[in-house]
Image (cartoon, rainbow, N blue to C red; front, side, top):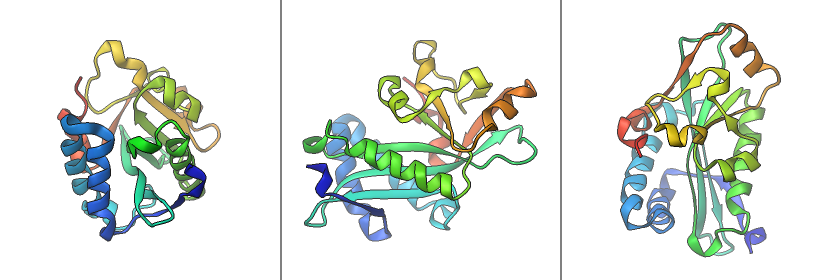
Length: 196
């Protein structure tokens, strides 16, 4: 049961367990790439330096084994709005296959979103399954003129989503009619993570 898991911030000592989890959750094809992405992002100076939009949470079972993880990293909007809009992207979200479909991923994401809201984050983006992420409050980002850093195939355009954590921010951004690109931190900005 996921109710027996505790959610906490990760530390550098968790990296091997996070890599193992990524391999298990994403399988032999994507797991190694996701593990490498985690290593690169968690070691990036902006993320490791305690940026307010950087948040790494793990779910651990009663034995202390990491069985879930969510990572949020800072993004910039280009062109930059005035005043600035603090924003992050959720990527990746991983849950041990034995605990999937029990709500642990939702718990991790919701806890992360709540902590980011409390830290003053205004927007959170995600590239993922709309059937899953719309239940967490995300909606297609293109309607607000917010484009991903790299092109996404048209068939998956609804997978690029945003959630406002502060009232009125999306409406303010859209009011100017400016299309903005979301620029990610470190490795997540590389085109290979955005392709089909």
